[in-house]
Image (tube, rainbow over all chains, first blue to last red; front, side):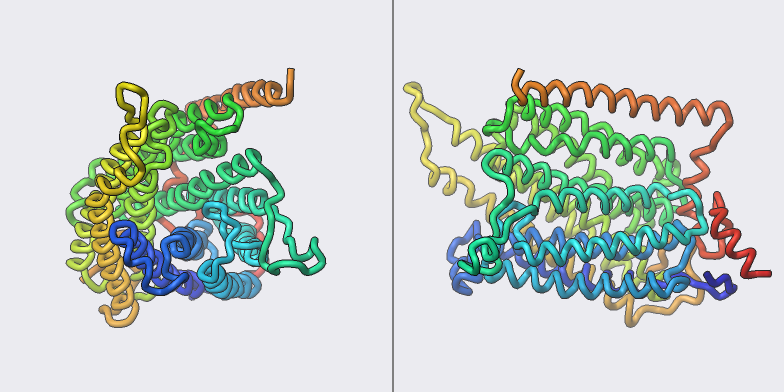
Amino acid sequence: MQSNAALEYDYSVAKLFTYTTILFGFLGMLIGTLIASQLAFPELNYMLGEYGTFSRLRPIHTNTVIFGFTLSGVFATFYYVGQRVLKVSMAESKFLMTIGKIHFWLYLVGALAATISLLLGYSQSKEYAQYEWPLDIVIVIIWILWGISMFGLIGIRREKTLYISMWYYIATFLGIATLYLFNNMAVPTYFLTDGLGNFMHSVSMYSGTNDALVQWWYGHNAVAFGFTVPIVAMVYYFLPKESGQAIYSYKLSLLSFWGLMFVYLWAGSHHLLYSTVPDWMQTMGSVFSIVLILPSWGSAINMLLTMKGEWNQLTENPLIKFMVLASTFYMLSTLEGPIQAIKSVNAIAHFTDWIPGHVHDGVLGWVVFMIMAGLFHMAPRMFKREIYSKSLLETQFWLQTTAVVLYFTSMWIAGITQGMMWRAVDEYGNLMYSFIDTVAVLHPYYAIRALSGVLYLTGFLMFAYNMIKTMTASRELTQEPQFKSPMA
Amino acid sequence: MDIRELQGYANFFMTIFLVVLLYGYIIHLYRSEKKGESDYEKFGNIALDDNIDSKPIVPNPKTLKENEEENK
């Protein structure tokens, strides 16, 4: 290990993942806006033959946002935050630098191949686990490379104590590794049948109810360890650093961490309420979902209290605004989710538009806001230039906040209307409405959702433009800002 | 008692065990701070003072030793 005075953090891998965060964010949200429009205006399904239909594009939207945008953001922030809280530079280890670069390039090739495979219609037909077995193998290798990077950096650290964000990054690594492996256990049929059928095709190792149970243990915890845990890692670093305020209570952050780890893994069966899984398991899913409010709010309240006495920063610094709103949306969606998991509420909510409404106030309000704020904080430090435009940031904030509100309010109304109409019976016990009646009633809400998609995508383009301009044309900085990110 | 019922009981008792463990951890954190054995709040500064040449809050003895050897 070198110990020369001019040693600096090396952000080359963090920069590469920053570029893919912007690229996949744009692609994922563009397709999301398109499919939201298709639901409102079905004729939009017929623009590109089989490649442009809702059913073909929807998994591309979800997977690009999860494995493209969010994971890129997780990796970008990890390669930035990891070095800083461990006080060790990637430049100090040629081995780790090489692994980091292979990690990125394999990820990029894998992500493109995965997207193309979905476009061609290869799918395991499991929610958020659509990729077929050859791609699963590539994903496992990419994950192992990240693990080597992470534990390699930890191995040469100067700071003995692992900062709370590192705990969350480690949990992301271990959580996804376990979940992904178990849920994607499959038999490639081509080899078992001496070359019959398609090479890509596979059959799950589980069957029936067990398959559903493993799938939703995975599906729910993919949200936990992809959309929650690494984003909490980000907020625990970026909010204190940007505001210059240490976490309100470090002990509370530790408690919330173990609470979250303890509770989250049990909640997945709430996706299978009123199905064929054992009754006690359904009840357990509901109960653990309610308990989950505690560790989630523990983190969120800790974040908001970090701003205690410093709320003036909310008006002065748009990045603080992004992060505080993200924490608030985290509180909202972690309250909404448990409410939906209550059996009697779920009887109305299940299979309705309230569910994508819930997912999107979490992802648009919490995940995307936090990742964008993190990258904006990193940009002046990585590229040694101030943020290109503060007014553009402010406009983007209000535009996207309006978009999220439009999205979830329209889906709340749509979902509850749908749920009530499906259950409505007349005095003789006959169903009052046919399915198409609900579709006709929901049209205006679908149109509002499509509009919110356009607004959010426009905001994301502003983010991309602001970032690219920051990298290339903004005023150069002579020294690294300590806390607040400088912006023009 | 069939396997499903057994799974249910196993889950229940494991939950109780883990709850005890979690509460034990909470008590441990607060008690050790009260006794002055450890100060958890100082770790919050790891994020604030994170330059590569900043003094670590708790230096890693392994890296420290390597640095000393190199500087000899």
